[in-house]
Image (cartoon, rainbow, N blue to C red):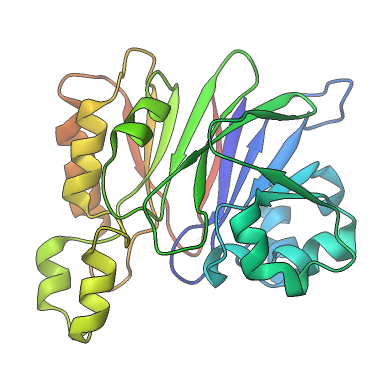
Length: 262
């Protein structure tokens, strides 16, 4: 299994998850799904090409929640390229006006579903959306856990993310930088609240609690361009590994990151 980001941050998010690193009966990239699509049509196609992909290589688009940096490009892209979409029913209720002409499938917390060679397990997270879910994906050999857009740690998400080979964890903000920022108080409360976004500190606390026996790679994601730095996020994640030899990387808004093999 492998994964790659087309971009990660408040200006747009899209993550590719593929069951294969080589040619299989399912095609040159095996089964590949795109988790979220917060970019426009031409920009998504351009970013896919940087990862050696075309829209025809995608088996599905899977949606975490209805905020525009995650869902803004989903339905136009899916409609044009005839790609099925998976999302929670609550998310569907929030975006149903844009779903015409798209094959829609529903998923829910704790109920795994398969898309060809990939299996995905949705799990609920605390965020200010209708029915937000994040995912753990597996091809039967490796496990990738994804956690962005959550305001706090919960026992449920910690249980879901244990035993993964790779993790993509939100490191949205540094608490002090957010407090000192020029953001209005209401926005500071929203971002730093229990249904907002994870700080470096809380992401580190989550990572420290996880079963890391199989963990090889940790990617810090969804960094704020004004209230965080890659160095601060990396330091928080590295400190939380506590002797685990996993590699720490940071995703960026413009380039995301290239394919990582598991």
